[in-house]
Image (cartoon, rainbow, N blue to C red):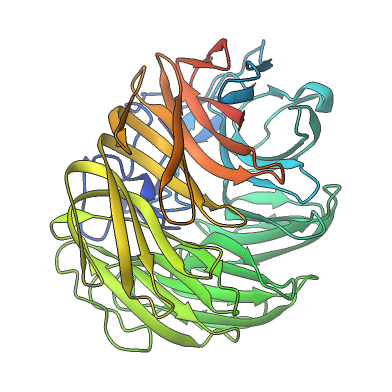
Length: 516
């Protein structure tokens, strides 16, 4: 099973949305009110109590959504952990694949690239991983976070591991112009990023950690309280400041700014300077559950944030459409000082569209994500009989201009990367068939990866799939200065890419893949 952390309380298990990008919804096996469904990597495995505890994580990508739920399970230690790398054919879609294997569950959650062409991967590890030139590294907590710097040939340059007790998950990554790395996430227990031990106050605190281009510690912030908190996505402002999003319950303190939620969970948005000082922090929400999902900045400095909500919250410019007994997605715009400019909402009554917001070369917003059924996107109708991948282009005021849908039998998590000069690269995982511009991609196993290259008009340039007889799950996408695309995630069973096959060990293993 994949990552969604389960928190057991004396009063029983409590599921919380701590993050929110529901793009990973996969068929919606369950949809409790206000809880966008999340995919499972496989059926949960019963594990007896005792020995080294592991906070197993189903792939619900709290980072996006939904429901990081922490559950104490037991894992087994073991030997023969291995890292593999194989080069693909020069003309093939895959240049190289690196597998991060261990005796329990490992995953690449996020990937970013620097201006110099280095790849930075943030993931989780639950056992020893052999990182090649960077050496063998053992996990210490139930779920450790790792940061791995990799060059364009696939060689690992350095690795940092974080986690002492409890369990920890990354929920966002960004790289600044100097090659520094910003990492967001949720921590349960103790963790040390290099500046001293940090301890979560209760069941989960949000964190933001900063490192220089050599992986050395710069600063770390935490936001915690009596409830459950998680850091969300990160964006870098034109002046180099960090825009940090997240979700919280109750009362929290973000760098000296006290915030109080209005309902079950609210959103926070903070502006943090290069040395970790919080310039401002804002809170948004209503009486129900709200969670942050994606964040980006338009060239003129306007901040765009998306996420999920329930009920009819008013963020400050009027109530969003009432979700009734389901949930919905919002898009909100803020000025550089964090003042709300406008907000839009859509409900998931007859379908779903858990989108992330991206900005194209003209500064126009695009909503991209998995979809199903019938959805009214701010007045524009999306429809697909099963599932699919949707793209909606908006104008500067957030009104829809155009849309397209690629139909599929089943779609997992979807994300995209803006291409300098125009266009997007969209990636994710799918099951059975995916229709793209008159071509059919067919998965070889339970689920495969897909990558779609599009020009500035939304026209498909090319598409490809990668995977094998097992189950591949997509985590994140980035692009090197050369235009090559790098993806990360995890796989269970057999994965075939670049002319080589890999078999996972005692659960999902992580991968990093460079596409030609």
